[in-house]
Image (tube, helix red, strand yellow):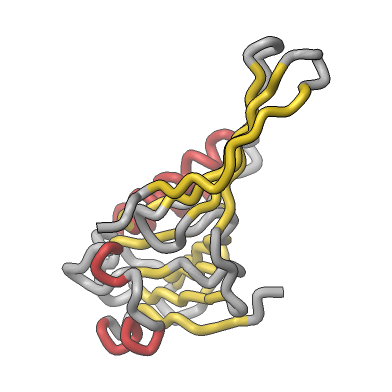
Amino acid sequence: MSQAIEVLKEEVFDCKCGGKGVHSSFVLKESIPHKLVSSVSCESCGEKNTTEDDFIKLDFGVEIMCDFTKENGNTLMAFLNTKAETHLFDVDSNGNEKEIFSFNCDRANVDCIENILLRGKDTLLAGDKNQFKDAVARLDSIIESKRFKMKIVDKSGYSKVCPPGLEYSQIQEKNFEELNKMDPRVVHKKISCE
């Protein structure tokens, strides 16, 4: 079994406060995408900064269209990479779509679709409650009815929605064509990453 953490470098530098700072870089390999984590700290002045990025960059992005208007998809698991955009659409009885709102994922995570919706609601509630009152009401209706469309746009190409009964650890290395055959409600499509 390979190590979950591979240390790339650790070096001491002269901090702007005059103390000795430490810069550490390592690769976190517990899942795909592997994450490059870089940390800078100085005990003298207390400066601390940590960044995270994908260790391997793909030459494509992904757009994932989810159609849960006929069948509930709230229990499906999804991996959203850092900076992935999530767009939620309300669909009326005539099939007309209207985007309710969108939000960006600030940290890579694996979660069920319902929790992604609830995180979107939290994002709305953190803003101007009067400005987003209608969107929050529509989102509450969607969460209750479990009927909606969702689009995920991820320029990193790593985000995926899992087919029923599968977890992200089981699909990490599956390509989009394989995933698309497993659940007709969810379509993964390669896009330009620029």
